[in-house]
Amino acid sequence: MFTTVCSAAVYGLQAYLVRVEVDLAGGLPSFQLVGSLGSEVKESRERVSVAMKNSGFQIPPAHITVNLAPAGRRKDGTAFDLPIAVGLLRDMELVPEEALQDTLFLGELGLNGEIKKVKGVLPIVQEAAKSGIRRVVVPGENAMEAAVIPGITVWGVNCLNDLLAALNHPELETEKVYQPRIRAEDLLREGTGQDTGDFREVVGQENAKRGAEIAAAGFHNLLMIGPPGVGKSMVAGRIPGILPPLTLKESLEVTGIFSVAGLLPPGQALITRRPFYAPHHTVTQAALIGGGSGIPRPGMVSLAHRGVLFLDELPEFRKNVLDGMRQPMEERKVQIARSAGMVTYPSDFILVAAMNPCPCGYYPDRNKCRCTQPQIEKYLGKISGPILDRIDLCVELHPVDILHLQKTKTEKSSEDMKRQIRHARERQAERFAGTDCRFNGDIRSAQVEEYCPLGEEGQKVMEQLYRTLQLSARVYHRILKTARTIADLEDREEITGEHLLEAACYRPSETYWN
Image 1: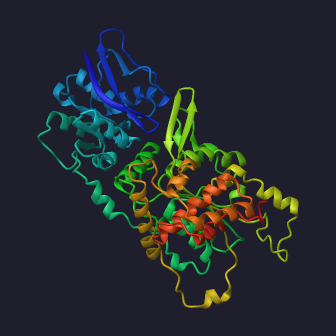
Image 2 (image 1 turned 90 degrees about the horizontal axis):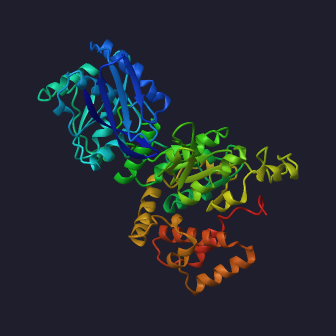
Image 3 (image 1 turned 45 degrees about the vertical axis):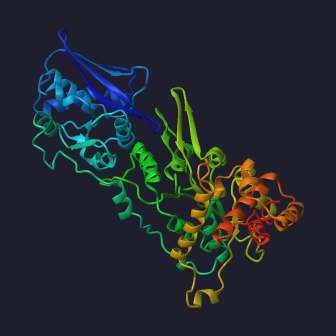
């Protein structure tokens, strides 16, 4: 007997439908799986056989062949266990044929018949909805994740016996099997709070707080330089709290990445807060950029999509790891090529980096710093010019005076900054409507004249800055983009000389890099 069960797989973030063809025929007893399979899929044979036996189903001694079509595309993961088992149950005439129509099955089987959580459910359900499939059957732990997609019925099941009962008696709906509908908009409203601390708690360091505000408003990359203990990590950790809430589109993008990586928290249907990742400086290139054996997995630059990636102790990262970030920072995406094909993951994040000015951390204070000039140059030389060129803002932090610590705190709060940033972003949304840009940080060199026009005063200031500071063309464009954001924060359409002078102050200091 021959049965076809609908399932799906993901390659990168792209989902595609898979036909699980199960044939039960006479001949010598065997169980074969074909169709360009990874090791995890090949192991399905043992998992399915034992799970069915322990669930009370005796597979007949027959020649069993399972083909996963299209056979030309490699399949990885454990999500094909459930559709294979359903195909066998149909061939054994334990499931009616009409129960499989317009239904997609996903799930890993435990040896006791339990249906376990799998990766990539959200992009698969999105593809199923586009393809006209009316119902998806997923593990109970993935049900909330799948239920945020409108226009499709979701069954969340926890064991094989429950699924068989539901397929044979669909009229007997129970909370154990059927997952209620979830509205993504409601989840976003409920989970927009960001528990990252308040900028009011950061005493002094007005320069760093201003840089963080500009970075958040225009989606600019930020580098903070200063000795230990001045508050670099404190400032970085509060930046997600001043970013506007995720939109529904952004939330689905981020949730899709977390789903493919298998990092969606249990019981959570959507990622509703801006991601914040702070990898240790020993991180490998594959962990940061993405990769791994088989189908490449998303790295931290993709997990931080629409959020903040914080690299503390920047010069301590391996040089090849930092240089691998050139493409993600420039193109806002990562392309990972393997023999099986190419995978593209989004990586539209704000890079916030922090570093000491020298190995001991106290340069240029020669009363404390004992590093030689060659040691300092070697330390700073670990950060390549192309990486520095992709950082729009560079701010210096200095030890806070005791008078700042003892005075009554009147610092600007995160809520005040967030309100100002929201207005600046509204101006950008109006400016870039109908274009591929979203923020000032996205403006390409060819678009600078269009979006950052200068009046007569601004042109004179910029000419003087260009000649005096001997700027490169890239730094020139970076100053204009930063000045555009500063003007937006002040609710000004025209970029003035003051905006340009402030933007020029955020270029890397000649104290460290000549």
